[in-house]
Image (cartoon, rainbow, N blue to C red; front, side, top):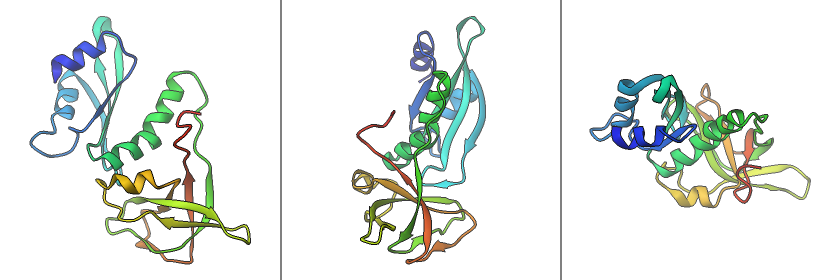
Amino acid sequence: MTAKINEALESCDMVITSAGVSRGDFDVVKEVLAREGAIDFWTVKMKPGKPLAFGEFDAHEGRRVPHIGLPGNPVSSLLAFELFGRLAIYQMMGRQPQPRPIVRAIADEDIVNTDWRRVYARATLSQNEDGRWHARLTGPQGSGVLTSMALANGYAVCPEDRERVHAGEECDVIMVDWDHPLD
């Protein structure tokens, strides 16, 4: 792992890894980062996507190369990249980060928060005949359920200080367009 990262450091502006940043026996990326650079922070208070490493590797000639260690579960990895990686790349390019549009929508079903972290539930966003936005969950919300992400065009948000957003209540929904991921 260290050799591959050092090889990448010779020619890249940022290292992005997927998996290896949690607490399991095979989660070694953050150990390499701690040894070969510095960890700025390791976890975030969101679901899915809690294990997320940010730091810098010491590269050649005193250069410091930023690192984003994405979670290993596919949905967690996609969401973490969308919320953190995409914006970091914009900034590194010298461009103004372009956050996704956020709309207020009526939750068509409960969005449950059992861990007191900000929940990003994969949802289908649509406008009703009266012009109001509605968010319907795309199915099971496990971090390994990739179909929930493939069917989604938004993330319905349940704040970390709420146990749930009840069906019929309004919530923020981050709109995503998978056809144009880096507008």
